[in-house]
Image (tube, rainbow, N blue to C red):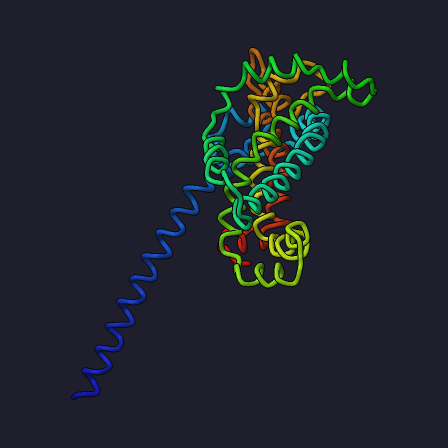
Length: 297
């Protein structure tokens, strides 16, 4: 009798666990479907003809005879120059802002000097500076600097707008990179740095030999964050670039929008092509990104 009661209790508990697990899986599946639905809709739309798009719902696959890859080819041809320009602009801006942010954070965290707090407040204030508030002074600044006129080089003349955009993004990204690096450097053991100082290592040597090798995870975090922000920017690009030959991919993607007829398959294909480099960056630095977010040194 007691064994029967024990078995009933066991199976009853198992049933409760199964029901809770089933409920958990159902919620997870619902969340996956909710978040992936826009991607699925955009992807199937990119493979439909205009007729197929009008005949079906956005989530339905292409009907028979209405499947096409022509939109992808057209979108790539029209975005190709913008993709190259975006790479030329985003890569140096990302690396420069991360490197300057790392150096600034090292000086604000692991070195002691008068006025640190005031400088840190300025960096933190820079994080909250909206793009719109600097558009007019930024345009006036680059008109005054006139790089192409001051540096008589063909590459500066040809890529004038991209250089302006790259330097602007690098400067704009330094505050947030500094804050991210500072929170990471605050976790580094002070005794290790003090031991290096007692051995006669200078501040530059400590940064090069100790801090920099330990900074790989947080560099991955800042590089991914900055690259995504810079790559997806449209506002600065619209203001600072006047030569159509310097258009970045976000401007070219915006130009895929038709004046009279909306080609949704072309716009969706272009959106996926424009987003592909950021996905590649996440895949390449995903492991280091997870370590950096977790604060592992």
